[in-house]
Amino acid sequence: MNDRAPSGQTFKVLCSNGRFPTFDMQLKGPSAFQLIFFENWNYPDATWAGFYFIGSFCASWALIVLESLRGYNLQNFGIGSWTTIPGLLMFNHTPAIYLPLYLGVRLALMTPSKMTPSDLAIDPMQLEILPLAFIIGYVAPFVVLLLPDFLIRGISVKQSTAAWWQQWPAYVALCQLLLSLIWQPAVVSSPSTTDAWPQAQSVYMFIFVLAGLSHWLSVLGAFATGVSMTDLFMPALPGKDVKARHGREAAKWCVQWDVVLATPAMILWAGVLYWQTGGIVDVSLGQRLFVNFVLAGPLGVPIGLLCERDAFVLGG
Image 1 (cartoon, one colour):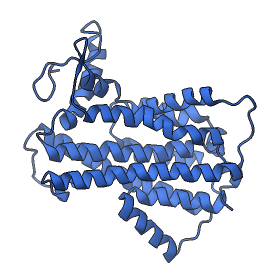
Image 2 (tube, one colour):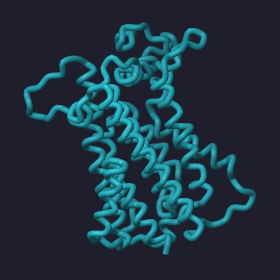
Image 3 (cartoon, one colour):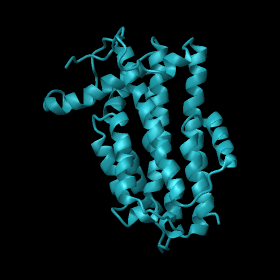
């Protein structure tokens, strides 16, 4: 592969420097793809589309990790399998293909048809550390991608972050595991639904803020830089005889399709989980979900559905 970043600069990625060419290629390839969006601000439409993709995926994955901490998931494979294994499988895979399949498998094979409070119970300690795990494992590296690049002993910090951060779900899982070991109390008690609900509300608020920031910073940033909402959210439609003008536009269409296909999958997944607990579907629910949509974008809908479910089951 070309040993240069999209801007033409020579790669200065922390790697084996040619000792293991395949390993280096697996680092430089994803680095080059992410640098298409964040290396500079010469193409604001691509930058804001990439910002929205990574930001929205953060909120989506936070919901998935939160669900993975439930009692019914721990009975199957434990915390690690639902967060680490998908992170490894997502290596060089697009969420547009992988995420709907992953959620479908979870619903079909691992989700009880009828949810009980004990099924939805979460260890309060896990709820306490989940936001910190995402801040360390997801938000902090993303901020590095947005900042100007600098070198440490000839190594590009931005390029190396983009290269090594490609399996972000696995990094979040690792942070969750390490923090749980640090926070582990001397006496381990069984999860209590009464204790879990107030902390779960705080986690939902954290995820809601992530989704809102992702959506509105993208919209306002696009508006400030003269990017239309169509260029920000809409990829080229299949079947149209339209070709990308350059590689950045093609990469932008890829991440836009990721969002377009993964977001409905998240809404459907959350809707099924809400329905399985016997939640009430009425006009009032629709109004609350619409407010969530306005405040946090499309991901406000699955966040609202799962929060409503927990309020119904855990909040009593």
